[in-house]
Length: 556
Ligand code: N01
Image (cartoon, rainbow, N blue to C red; front, side, top):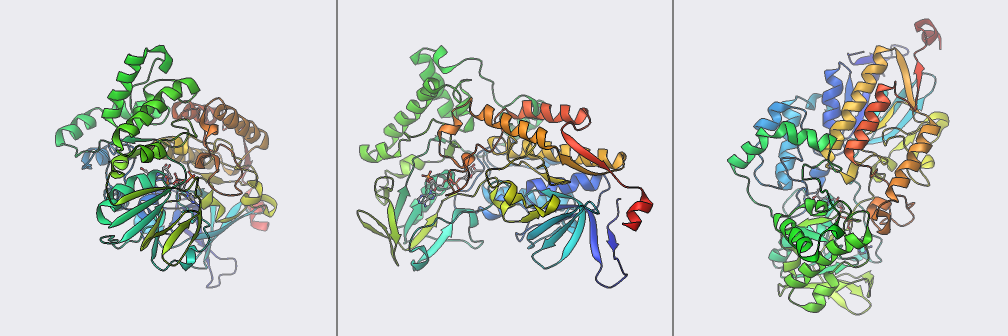
């Protein structure tokens, strides 16, 4: 099982390469998957459409791109040596440093020999007679594999907005999620940014410092908390490293979102106004995503949530000089946290600059883009360059681009036409031996992604090794178990305020996409426990198929 086999039906030159597993994507998920499967003696081929490893950190090179989880935590935990030796320079490392880390991991663990870059997987089809997948890539080759693992990432399918006239624009057009590799300099240019999600909120302050004029086109204002980014001292790194065993354990087992922080023991309305305000103030000053864990009911109780939302709205009004602009920047159509909260450095203060204008395209939608301007009902805003910070076809977009055919030739896109259906976010019934890392139905984007990636990769590796030990040929989610899980994911989501927002969690940012809350909101600790119990019970809810006897296989 361990060696790469080159098999050929007729000994012709056109041999088909055969692997135990094909992994799609060489981001953090695909790299660790390769490392673990190799460690178990499996042959693996990883295909990566980018020119290097790193996934989202390879593509998202826009100015100001950083992770919103602190780097000491947004990093692999599987190797003690790695976490002790890598020196993060800042609390939130910038994109080039995270990419450098990914490249370091690929080299340090000697992963490159099994990764084929610049290659997209176009098609994967399951052959029921052999229980093998045929995987066709953009270089027109087909290989076979017993297992296919989709490590395609949740936010890797940049979405171009459908705006009339966009192709007629004469200046340069950039998408934050597909940024050029060569430096982009906006000095002296009039720049328009469309969108005000995390990517815009990170890039706007930097573009504003370069551009002669920056116009930000906002449809929906977002809640954002200061990052309070700062260099990490050697001492801070050492203190953190010394506590890694407890920090990593907590992130895996106790935290809801895979981030080490205090667990709140009371609700927002249990405190009086002054006490509550003092707590919000302290978290605002500390900065970062943990603002949302001041209290234990901000995600479930609207009255409690309003107290946090009001606090942030007040902060915006304090920071932004022009009251009209401040009002426009105050989010008012969704509970705080029901869309991914943003983390910024000087975003709101940027609107005090004389060269920055905020345009409300909710009341005055963009009608079209002309050769040199963005035209709203009221005005033409002349720009030399356009930055589209318009987001991603999240969670399912990258999977949907691959023609995946399971039993009876049915495609995954057909099966997921009304929304993704998975068991545990790991497998989908009708698609044997096809695993998804951080897929819909798992905590995924609601968590520190690396914590969830490591959990899935470990679970999948253990599962594949378990099958090998028992001579099993195929594994598949059972429809009844999947239906029950989908219902559970949906039920838990609706005990929270999350479905109240038109977010990409719900698929609401893509016209025509079914609106279903995709990630599992039960918390990473609880989810891990469920996955572990299912494995301990012989992979409950999954159907296993034994390998046919050797002579039967040979004659089929
Ligand atoms: O994308 P978004 P993003 N006309 O979908 C607007 C992660 N991330 O790239 O809200 C005009 O959040 C849209 O408006 P509306 C993070 O998880 C992580 O910013 O649909 N506007 C919205 O304002 C994040 O949540 C980091 O009304 C249009 C914006 O574009 C996720 O990626 C950093 C439009 C899109 O916001 C996505 O963030 C950055 C149109 N036709 C991102 N279409 C880290 O720190 C869309 N919009 C790891």
